[in-house]
Image (spheres, rainbow, N blue to C red):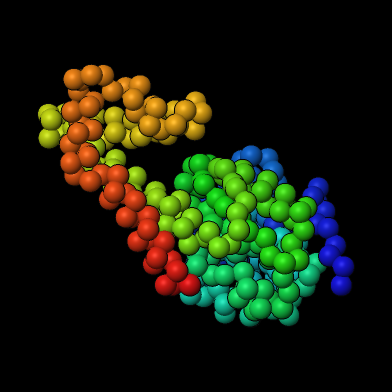
Length: 274
């Protein structure tokens, strides 16, 4: 069966799963103008709070997942990894090759998704939680029957909630360990910086605000200047100054090695779970 292109100017987007990630993506798609809310749907079943969240920005909430699939051209499976198999199998009869399927379930491989769906017009995406504020770091990998046009459509969708890259699926465990789990490492660093500020005499609210904005500003410098982070570090490290004194303490504590180990450990855990 020939793969029919998705009508980019009129397609409907459906979410299987109405959790926070699905909401973040849907909100981003609407706010960016990629799709109007009238072309997005989900099913929240008996969870009225989740239904209210989607309805608050105009998304249609249907009674059943089957209704979502039947009324959508692009279907995003945004459910927990341990239930994605059941979700795909329950809907398999409706998942024709006319529909582009997407999974954001961590650790669930394309070969399994394609087997459960009965075809390979599937795209796997690994986003992260900053999608909620339009700053996600997402990576996608295309299944066997997904076309270049399909990839472009998904890149535009997920590009509305941050930045997205394409990579071979073999890298997804490492991606999970870095960008998937990475926000938690940064939250820990922000909390620690704020605690340091309090220890040095700052009021808690000021310390936390300064720590958060400092991390945001440093990340923006890294992405926007094109400079290597080592060069940016050197730019603020004067001989015998305050910054090099702080960096010396970080190096004594194995700061860089600890972060590297965290990414490797999370990547290994992703491999074990998958």
